[in-house]
Length: 114
Image (cartoon, rainbow, N blue to C red; front, side, top):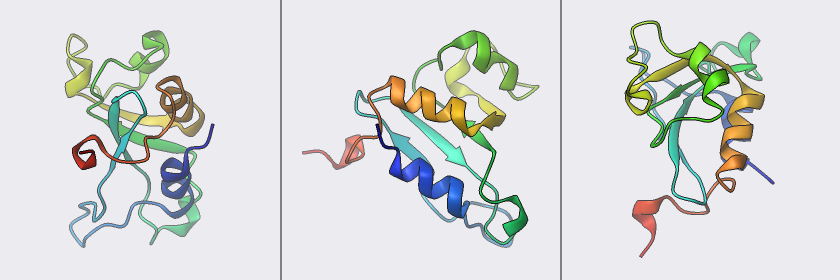
């Protein structure tokens, strides 16, 4: 299964403004409707690319296997609401496995479907 958007983010990073805000749409939509945001190092920091870990935010459902994802929760996050949380320093392989478990990347974002 291919993950072209994830592969691009890993290889090229996430461009940011001078204040560190992402310039790109960070969401990845999966074939089954699951969505998450993915943030990689700024491409200006080329020594960090390709990314080995990513920041994942606000998944539409609890990421599984939860036993592995729980350890990457941001320290202040509420474990009872994993969809309103950010996951820090997540290995690329774990993010890829999550996307593939939801049928891979969707061709179009859900809001673009007619």
